[in-house]
Image 1 (cartoon, chains in turn red, brown, cyan, yellow):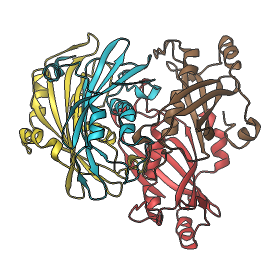
Image 2 (tube, chains in turn brown, purple, cyan, green):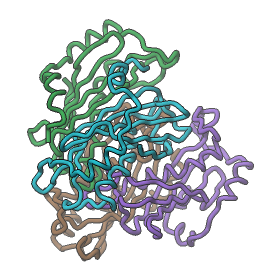
Image 3 (spheres, rainbow over the protein chains, first blue to last red):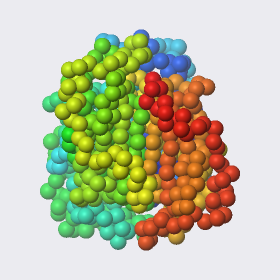
Image 4 (cartoon, helix red, strand yellow):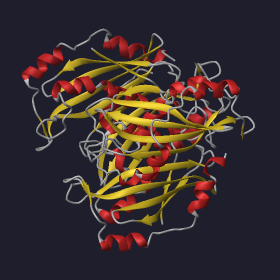
Length: 147
Length: 147
Length: 147
Length: 147
């Protein structure tokens, strides 16, 4: 599991005085930096090096988040497929899980615009970051009761 | 169905030369303006008037989008529950469906921090915007059902 | 002068219920699309075609802007130098000038990382968009007294 | 002087492979958090407590910034007036000053929509953060020649 801390900024609040929903995709993308370095250690995006494309994201907003305190973003592997893998993301503030989400990324050759199988050496590293802390069935079951 | 057009801006591209994934939540939020006016015609956010909170979003990035041409954002109702409803969002560019998503909103009293049943007169208006163009059963099957 | 209309989105408000200052740079960048097409008609960014780099921006927030109504972004040329030019930007909402700003762009060769003189044919087109409506001395004089 | 570190995220790059200009206003706003706490220690925005409105920002993009490494944001006081003050902002990456800017804030009563004189006790705290490292005349002189 990777952990990074973000400080909400003034404009991350919206007119309801809480963190706007469009901020979470940005924070979760920040949380992917460590994951990206597994694939491209220097974050080099040239097409011979960069082979990741994002195909799906989802976000559950469990409790309102506020401007006043830092947020911990946790990032981990949920599932590894043949040419894709699923990331889990969580946002924790003041000791509570406030939002969680997933992102599906595909190992992709931008030059020929086709997916490729994940190399074994990368697959082995990804496996070490699998984090099944939260049962995903449970995750779906309780999401609507949270507000 | 509501339709609005957005012009991608230079910074909506990312280092891969396509529209970044975090831009779609912003465009789809823009697409919700007309929907919001059903609930608050002047977009007044005072707690006696504004009763909407977003609890879930999801995004499928079907094809890469580019800076060079306008994007049509289509917004419609997918499902109406007791105190919540599900929106469908689509992004069309150069004649192709490039991304789609859903957003679940709850009718909510911010003063007592509790959900409320949707008023019948609003429910009737929402019904006129149901748009089952894409097989929504398939789409719902794996998505949220959680609220 | 170029004109484009933007619809504020929910998250463009901040916790004070007005449009956040960081939104204006985004709206003014959207306003530059038509200007960019003078240099690269298809908005092609390949280094043989794209020759613009931004070196300075400034923003005066004259009056508070709100979520509730559309905003017209006006973009025009203020000054043309040897290898650079200055754009003027204005944001109008509900009949009032709410914010204005400037942006300095340099004609630039990304391959050798050096500025170049503006080609005469481009200079001639830029001249047709000079718009001296507001006295820039006056503009500087009253900038911080406006609220 | 206040210092905070931000990690660029994937989408902060634009199609030219460098950090987009609209990201700096966001990073500099993050840098203002410590300054805001002088006025409202818990970042409480209720109109009896929050008395700051931003009236001007400016940004000089001195050198291109990249996704690959962290950025230090430095924030300090440049000038204190009767009811307003000017902040200086700098972005440092890989040992180089990459961008700098200023922000003018006014001490403001949102209920009566009028500026107020800065209280003496706040003025005294602000004075301890004055940081005249860079000559501002020089700053204006070379601003557009920087690339």
